[in-house]
Length: 239
Image (cartoon, rainbow, N blue to C red; front, top):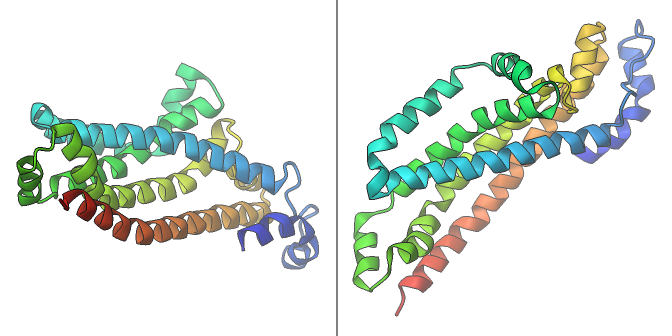
């Protein structure tokens, strides 16, 4: 369906002309929709990668004995970062780093890191203590327990946080076009400024469908990951 929209939208001029007869140019042609989708995915992937590394790293830090005292501070900082709307973050970032992708990445990382960090905190904290005791009892080191026990058990919850983060950022990335970043927000911004509802619909359709496709891909990954994680853990625990 996404491919149909990407390649079929430029050929749907007659349809949009019938729906919006008052518009002289009912199809957005300033950039190809494929180029916009790829640019949109690129900025989401970069910000998502940074958010995953930062979120999981923060979760690991505050669930270790040496970092437990900082858990409340981390949760407070993350909650505060979510209280700023994306437009406000962009408005502050532009004077500091200029227009383009950089301020957009700052805003997307701020919004994407919270679900990942929450997933990491919840997943790592929910590993049963008896399982950890068994791992210690069979002689596993802390590093082995982390990689072979904790992370496999926490992986489904962490993946759920990553899923939420990516889906949110697919929608939020459209706002990045207000500061010069090339995303699927361009047709929406141009349409709003030029009173062209067709452009807005075209951009919104692609953003919404892209988010749905990403969500379904993570759903498929989660279904495959859960039994795989359980099997891997059982194999590690077996003599």
